Each structure stands twice: as structure tokens, then as C-alpha cells.
Length: 184
Image (cartoon, rainbow, N blue to C red; front, side):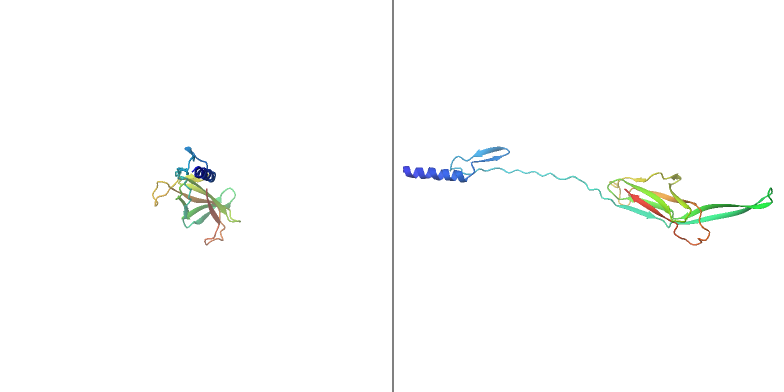
């Protein structure tokens, strides 16, 4: 019998070398010290962390009218009794049809819309943007659409006003410039 005990002890030593002697977890440890319990049971824990990052999504609508302008010039011959000659005085004015630009913000962030007018080469015309009677300085600032109805996003409307003169040969509508709307 002594011989069987020796074999059992040798077998136990061989198994102990094959089984990890100790296993560590964050909450404790366990030592395998007999063949009656040759395994270590370790609880594995996990938790979930959700990402709350919200990506900014931009969607901006730009709408404009016909952008048709008519230059009206009136000349008046005024008699000068000092020189005994007629003196020509010319005045010009602009009228417009559909000169509005509307910017609507459907984004989940605030946006700024910068508007600029560039005359076509050779045209003596300048353009400025107005909100009502006030000239637009800088940009059109629009709030985020978060919390607004889809059919009523934050928006702003400006009117293009022209100054300068137009060649009298241009009796039909011609391209005299471009408007650029830059959103940032």
C-alpha cells in the first residue's frame, strides 16, 4: 500500500505542475492545493459604457427670388440762364423683382451665412445686403434647429440692393454679377 500512496503523491505532483498553481482576479486569489479541488473558478465581470457623442449634421437651405433688377435713368435738360445753354442732369435708380435670399438652418448646430456680391467684369455695379432697413454687417447668424418644428427652422432673409449704373445698351436681362452664400 505504501507503494500506491507514493504513486498517488507522484501523480498529484505531476497534476499540480500541469494546473496553474494560482489564478488571480481583481477581487482575490485562489490556490489549488489538493486533488480534491484541482480547479480555480474565477468570476468574470463586465460593464457597459455607452457613447453619448452627438455628431453635428449640417443641412442648410438657400432660397432666392428671380434676382431681376431694372436700372431707371432719367435725364433732364435744364436751361441755364447764366450760360444760355441747356445743362443735362442725369439721375439713376434701381428697382428689383425677387431680390430676397433666405437661409434656413436644419442643422443641429448654429451656423453663420456670409453673403457677398461680385459684379461681372466691366459692370459698374455694387451690391449690398439688407435686413429690412439695416445693412447686413458681417454674417447672418442662425440658431440650431434643435427643438424647432421641421417646417419652421431658424431662418433669416436679406435683400440685395444695387447701386451704380448700367450700360444703356443692355435693354434685356443680362448677368451682371453673382451672389455667393458661404455657410460655416
